[in-house]
Amino acid sequence: MALAAMGLTKPAHSPWEWFALLALGGVQIAEGNLGWSESPRQAAWAIVAKLVLCYMLVWTTGGIESSHYLIFLLPIVSAASMFGLARTMLVTAVASLLYLSFLLYVLDTYYVPPDGERELIVRILFFFLSAILVNQLATENRLKTQRLSQANKELNEAQAEVRRSERLAALGQLSAGLAHEIRNPLGVISASAELLAKNVGAENAVAKELAGFIGAEVTRTNALVTRFLDFARPSKPHREVQPLTPIVERALQTLADTRKPDDPDITIEKSLGPIPPFSFDATLIESAVLNLLLNGREAMTDGGVLRIQTAAEDGFARITVSDDGSGIPPEKLEDVFNPFFTTKPRGVGLGLAMVSKFIDSHGGTITVESQPGHGATFRILLPLDTDE
Image (cartoon, rainbow, N blue to C red; front, side, top):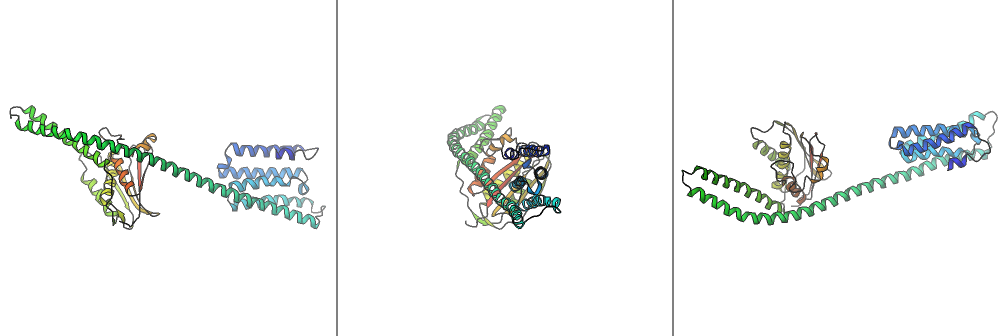
C-alpha cells in the first residue's frame, strides 16, 4: 500500500522508478513468504537488495530532493527487526551514506541553505532513531517469545509429569492389590509342591521333577510379586550428606560382577567429575544408576560402548548414561518410564518406572533422548541439597 501510494505522488514515472517499486515489493513479499528472515545470510542479502533498490528509486525521483527518501526506512526497519543493535546501526549508517551520496552529484550546481543542512541532519537522525526504537521493540518481542516458549515447554512437561504421577499412583494401588491376592495362593502352591516332593517315592522321578519345576516357578513369581509391592510402596528416601562418586563406582562394580559368559563384549567409559557431597539415599540412587547401566548393557546385543558421566551443573548433580544400542522409537519415548512398559521379550516393565520413582522422591528429574539406531541417553538431575 505504501509503495503503491508513493508511486502516485507524481503524474509521470520513469520505467526505472516502476522497476524499483515493484522489485522492492517483490523482495519484501519473498522475504516473508520464503522464510529469508530465518536465515542470517539470506536476510543480509535481502537487505542489500533493498538498499540497492531504494538507492535506485531515490536516484530516479530527484536524488537528494526526492520526496521518497523515507523508502530507506524499509531496509533499516528490516535490519532492526532481524538483527542485533550493532548490525542495525551498520545498515542504518550505510543507508544514510547512500542517501547523502546524492550530494556528490550536485556539489557544483546545488546550494544547500542552512535550513536545508538542518533538514538533512534531522532526516539522518530520524533514520537512526527509528532503527534504535524498532530494534528495541523487536528485541523485547523476541525475548517475550522465548520466555513464552520456555514457559509453554515447562507447562507441558509439568502436565506430562502430573499425568504420569497419576498413572503411577493408580497402577501402584492396583499392583499392591493384585500382589496381595496372588501371594496367598502362591504360598499354598509352594507348600503343596514341597509336600508332593517329599511324599513321592524315588521311583516316581517325573513327579519329583515336576514338583521341582512348580517350586522354582513359584519362587520366580513370588519375586515378581515382591517387585510389584516395592513399586506400590511409597518411596521415603533415607537421606545422608555423602559423595556421589563412590555410589556410582559401586554400581559399576555390581555391573561387572553380574556379567554372564554369554553377555556381549562392552567397553565402559566413565567420566566422574567433582561433585560436592549432598543429601540423598545411597541405596535408591545406586539402584537407579545400576538399572540404567543394566538396561544399556542389555540394549547392546552386538556389543558397544557404555558411557557414564557425572558432573555438577547449576545446583544439580547430573548423571548421564548412554549406550550404542538400537535406540528407542520416537513414539515410545514418552512411555519408557511408565510401569509395565517394556520392549524386552521377558521383561515386566518396572525397572525404569522404579528409577523414575526413586528420582522423583529426591525432587529430581530423569529424561531420555534417543534416535533409532543411535542408542539412548538417560540424564538424571538431583538437587545438591545438604538438608537430611
